[in-house]
Amino acid sequence: MGRVAERIRAPGRPLLAFAVATLVTPLANAEPLAAVELTGNCPSEAEIGAALSTRRLPPEASGFRLLLVEVPGGADITLSRGSSETVLERRILSNDCHALGDAAALITEAYFIELKAQAMGEPAVTAAGKAAEAGSPEPAPGPTPAPAPPPEKLAPPPTTPRQEGPSRADAATPPAGAVMRFGIALAGGAELYPEEGNVAAVGQLGLGLWLTRALELEAHGVLASSTTIGTTPNRVSRVERRAALRALGWMGGAPSLAAWGGFGLAFTSVKALDVAVGPTEVAGSPLVEGGFALRQPVGSGIALGAELGCHVLLTREQYVVEPDGQIGVGPRFACALLAGATWTNR
Image 1 (cartoon, rainbow, N blue to C red):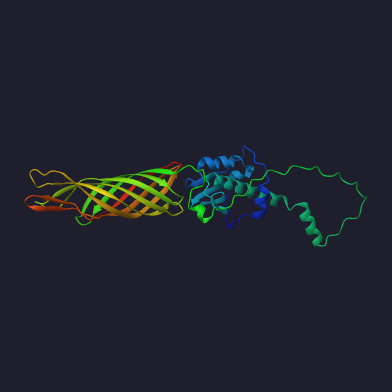
Image 2 (image 1 turned 45 degrees about the vertical axis):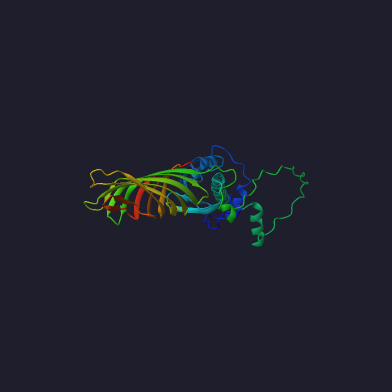
């Protein structure tokens, strides 16, 4: 569990509730909440479900909703009564998804413990102290009671060592022993070649590897449909294929926004259309690319997404037919708008 931001609106004393909650022995078969909503994949549905099942929640918990929103380096939790009355808000910082689930469950249990303590009134010692301060009369002295036997020594309750929030260095690397996070993305859309005014259909397949919670490295391949450039008698048909490596920097929240950039190679098949026997040739060019991506989680590990990006070919293909010389020059750059889906392993 990481450090918790101080923006809680629970009634009473939140720090007292947290201290009491750490001493309560969790019980199975807890009363369920009305709803548990997750935005993001850390913690997962299984992790928060397992954590809540070990906590003792009262019957009135069935009227509350718990919302967890994944943010860079942790998660925001919101507990509300019904659908509109927010009673508690906290931010938990940790790179460990399992620890985030445990922390959310513990804070939820602590809220109901504090609520119950307030309904029952202050402890007897505190109440008596307040009565003395208010000037209430002392009771008449009675017979001296027999001395009470010494209290039995009880073993201290088990406590969980507190886990400090991640430092800046920890936030830049995955937690030790964590399963490597990877994803597969499939998208399709349209690509515009502004110089010629042509539009091609494109498909993209990517394999991403998460280096940190906010940085993803993705290798992807793109295939564009055939387009025609030039005018008769110098028309050229071209089909472009690309392979590139890019880095995506994701910002928190849902949906998540990323800026990305990368480099790669383009392989273009070109053919003269107005030549009786026009062989197909393949031209290669290095490229650079950049753009923005958007993803909205919709289920366990599944997200819908869209992206807008452009690429620039560092060299332009040329189609030459002897003895007429050059008859075709390829475009310098193009921009694409894609939509698709992504799956990640957690």
